[in-house]
Length: 124
Ligand code: FES
Image 1 (tube, rainbow, N blue to C red):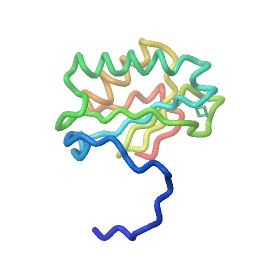
Image 2 (image 1 turned 180 degrees about the horizontal axis):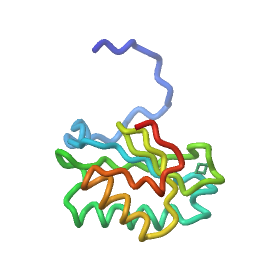
Image 3 (image 1 turned 90 degrees about the horizontal axis):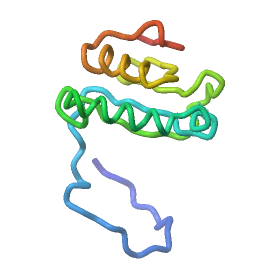
Image 4 (image 1 turned 90 degrees about the vertical axis):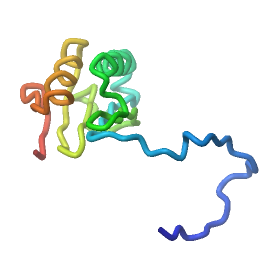
């Protein structure tokens, strides 16, 4: 892939590097948890820890067949949050408790079965 040259957008001449940071993690699904201002007020940072811990219990973090879990800024439907989206299925979830976070992990991210009652929108 050719990447067009551009002028530097930063005045910083040194950027930290590490060989591991050239590796694209193996995963089957990419999960985006909103940690924008309104979802954070509704507990998304605490949910982040619960999701990560549950995925670790299932050995599903950044593994083949597993999940790449990414925090995002506002995904826009703030009133419905905390918002969690799952790709490639393009499922939009509201997750408001540890129990709901566990259900999304256990059902969708481990068993491959959409937790339909927690969806706010699905493209699948
Ligand atoms: S702050 Fe999460 S959707 Fe807006």
